[in-house]
Length: 232
Image 1: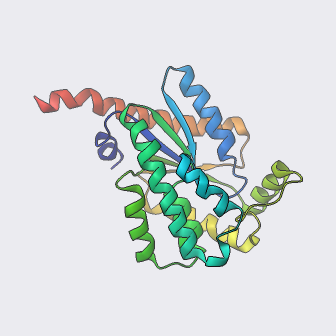
Image 2: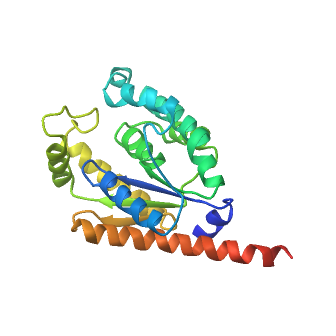
């Protein structure tokens, strides 16, 4: 399954990072990018909500909680609109030129945050997802798994005197439900998702992530090298 998805790409690799609050996604993405760039790869770091000028304009509305009063369906629509712009303006062109795209959150966050804990209709969520990504599925998704209580402690320490965003402020029970939802996605899509224990030391987490990404790159390289022979 993973080989088939990678063969459909022109040259690049699309990797997403998912997980609950305080799992360390931003830190680990930066570490991975530095390592890959050291090997000469073209690496693009991006994030959701945001990543493109249009999507960044929506980011503040979502994380500030300004859209919360309109309900999870409206939030899901806003996320989808931002994602569509992000995909077409940033992600797809970067993958087409051969870059490794590392994205902090993507479609699985919507599946979990709006779909599962927002209690939205699965058919509605699938329709939004199809429109938003327009076929741009991640080749690999790293799920950073951590106990929500520890994740929230880390998020609070990182934030300091700052104000918790729209999603960080929710109850521990909701965060626990999100953790289970992420793990369920990983169980259902093992060809795309790799679960990494984010409670480990940062160096151990980084090593596990790098092994998964380099494995995906090896598959992509193998496919690229065999394609000319297959075409003749």
